[in-house]
Image 1: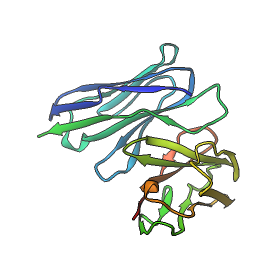
Image 2 (image 1 turned 180 degrees about the vertical axis):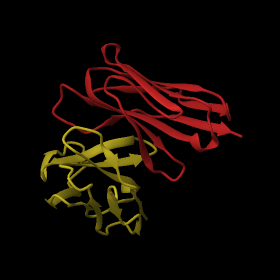
Image 3 (image 1 turned 30 degrees about the vertical axis):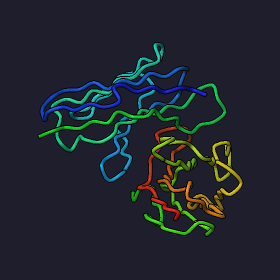
Length: 111
Length: 112
């Protein structure tokens, strides 16, 4: 099946810093989503971005489908940004349409 | 919209007991997904339905697991008999066709 690799696995930053999270995938996709899992375990949709660039406040994302990677940018980090960020994809050539998740990036924002 | 609703939010049971997890998708969505999250395996797809029909159940770990979707607004995931290794967080998600998947709050299951 399709492979999803996220980097870095862990990231510790001071409040106010910027960060870039990366997601590499091994094959073509027709769905790519970024999620934030907060400390209470909720999976919160950030972006649906199989290609192109989107922005939502301090967060933005870019997917270059031809090169099989996506980037999530967080600017001016706040302590509430702490948690695990997951990238998940749907392989465009397969029969299954469920999401395949990466292992996530664990982000800690220190005050 | 209330979002995807799951119940119960927490379940503690003893090995061998039957466990039923419930999910109400977002109104108007026609695809429903069940996922499981564990420390060892991360987030993985168990089964998904499209227009109430099971499309892919290859992720269901074994025959002890079964899922149904009797109508467009309700789905169940049943484990019978439950085992300690089934302890995990079970998420339900829904989407319109193959668009954005929206996740419920999850059911945290502990099998003793």
